[in-house]
Image (cartoon, rainbow, N blue to C red; front, side, top):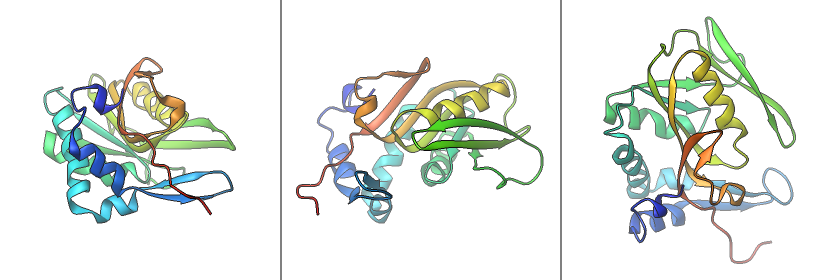
Length: 191
């Protein structure tokens, strides 16, 4: 569900967040309109508004774990976790975490990938939200959900800054609520 459908319709923060995201045509390959959040991070107010909207959403949901997907979920997740009194758990690409990990493979439109999490990072019964910058097909968020659930956590919601058209109208992803701030930006004239 988009934030505008959930009480934030007309909220000027959403427009400012959307406008702070730069679109890079044909990156990383021809036909892709890359939604670059690095420009959002450069805009103090839009970045703060992004984090604040998530904090407002999760503050009263009894969340004990904020899981961020590498790498852009790391940019939003820790601030949200600190503000709501939860721990932050990084979900990383293979061979990035020291110590014992569990892994979850998933399909991409161009191959496969994998997420890993430290064994013991979550305990059974903990309530978790998963944060990432963008949801396209939902494969990465689904893998993150499976990873947390294998350790006994209850995934309360998946949340992203941007939701591509493939997820427009979806309120759930594999049975889990899906919360998205803005739709992808278009560019007026492409190269």
